[in-house]
Length: 385
Image 1 (cartoon, rainbow, N blue to C red):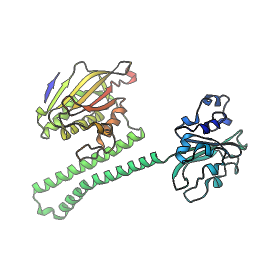
Image 2 (image 1 turned 180 degrees about the vertical axis):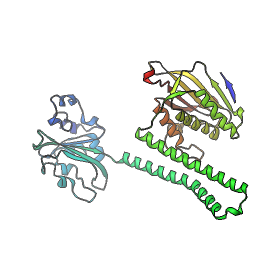
Image 3 (image 1 turned 90 degrees about the horizontal axis):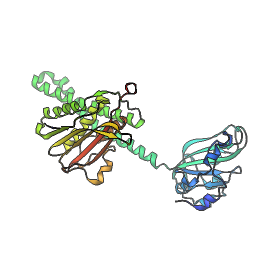
């Protein structure tokens, strides 16, 4: 180790004023005025509004894209004509729910999956606007959303399950095989053979433990529940420990060059998660990169207010990451040109860095390899400021 210092105008014009938000009829005075400048076509979701007679008076551009019905054609039609929705059992939705009839206490319909003609799925929710709580319905406000985002999420979950099942199968098969063999034929093996098999079982159990830890981290990152337990961290010492792990494992000390800049600010962070970040980045550099792995730790400032922070850069001299792939490096299951691993490590690294209030980027290093740089704010607890 070397150390150195699209918008149909007809639909818009048919709306005499901007639509009130759901519930505006019973809200406090002035609430509608706050939305007076709203153009329905500016909304990202489909918006359909029917008046007290059940005829459509607003059909925005997003609703036209989702339903493939032009806005000017939908205006003036009844709800069931403009939106011929059916539930998953083939029942006509507006006849089934009867927004303008039924109990006067109903306030709307929660979001659910309905079908348009041709079997196209759409997510629909509705709000019934009344002038007073038990009065007649004056407007029905319908929100429409496509199902593409939900399907992408479902596919992502399916990929995660498939990846985990694949990664678990190999070590579990090994553990089961060796333990069954030892239990069945213990007396036939000498001590050295038993030790070798038990060491293999231990290593495979470690792989399973790490995979389960990755899954828990992903769950916490996706739900925003990743906890950071801050305490003083000597990041230079942490870098040294990780390099020692690699040299003990057979890497040449000359493969690593460490540059620690002076006057590093005191860093408050979660030491276990800092180890997780460094471990993943160094493992990637050693496994996928070539030549010297350079680790640089330097003081930096963040944002316009000049907040102190620590910048860590890890680079190698390998082929690097193709330019077209850099935008996908921190996504799930990205493995680059070489197979191996779950492809979850860098996704977790990004989540951990951001949980500390920091940022991480990837680029091309000065010698052509991949370069990862993460910046952490000092993170001093408020009671010490």
